Amino acid sequence: MSERISVAVDAMGGDNAPDEIVKGAVDAVLTDERIDITLLGDEQLVSAQLGKYTVPEGRITICPTTEVIEMAEPPVAAIRTKKDSSIVRGMKLVKEGACDAFVSCGSTGATLAGGQLLVGRIKGIERPPLAPLMPTAKGPVLLIDCGANVDARASQLVQFAQMGSIYMENIVGIRNPRVALLNIGTEEEKGNALTKETYPLLKDLEGINFIGNIEAREIPAGGADVVVCDAFVGNMVLKMYEGVASTLLKEIKGALMTDLRSKLGALMIKPALKATLKKFDASAYGGAPLLGLNGLVVKGHGNSKAAEVKNAILQCVSFKEQDINGQFREKMKLVDRTQKKAAAE
Image (cartoon, rainbow, N blue to C red; front, side):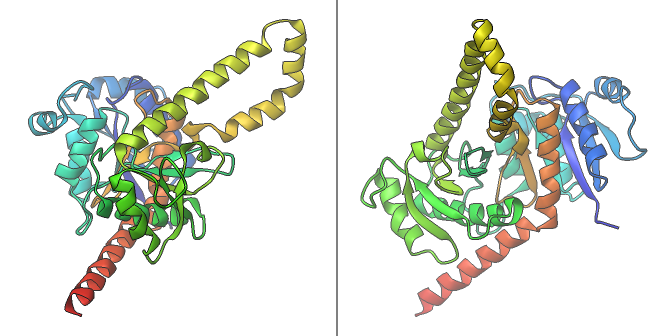
């Protein structure tokens, strides 16, 4: 029998909690029989939602908590003071080894802070990056970092490239993924101090398929499989990406409903249009993993519905099966041995 995967889920996090969170958890266990889920949150509220569904016995349990970390709270202070919150308790389950992963659609700041303070970093990892998959014309691209480290150093971007390459090859199945550095031009000498320092390091780095700089406009066309940047730039790219997609979808729908002729045309192109739009549906990829921790932490969108929650949970299975953290640890050990050898010479 396949190894079981235990996932802790923050039932109180996000705009649609606990309704959509619980539904997503139920959908996940019904989709994959290897998954067991612990829902953390207000026992009465979570039980009421869970009671709406029929779930195989023992597959979903409730861990009662009495506190919730709100979006506007200072993250570090909230992690330290609200010890019975769903986020803190969930992180501790991962740290203690009771669960393999933690998924939350709640406070991004608290999730990032908790990941570092409670779960802890893998030895050798300088900073864990937040790495969402985004849709492109050629399949998903990993944007790393998009929210965890706004003031990154070149050595950290190098580690982002290494972790991103491992993730895309093993989770998405892309052999020798193309790694690019996000910049304002494709020429090697372009960019600010950070990108100018990072470029030669990536160019000389063994074990990744570095293809040079990439401009933001090339991302939707699928110009790379892993796009490396600091979180300040990455988060703006992500938000612009989401905003443009939402606006275009709204405008297309409006244009197709303007008159009888456009409505008839809409009926004719509906199948093709639906298939095309599905390629650019970010919800299919679930949440963004915080890579480089001693356990898996996945951050979902604050407005996630059940489908996104389900997909965020399902990605935890591949992460464990492919032993992504084990591969990160081996990579860091190899880097450490190489550095020590170079220093000795």
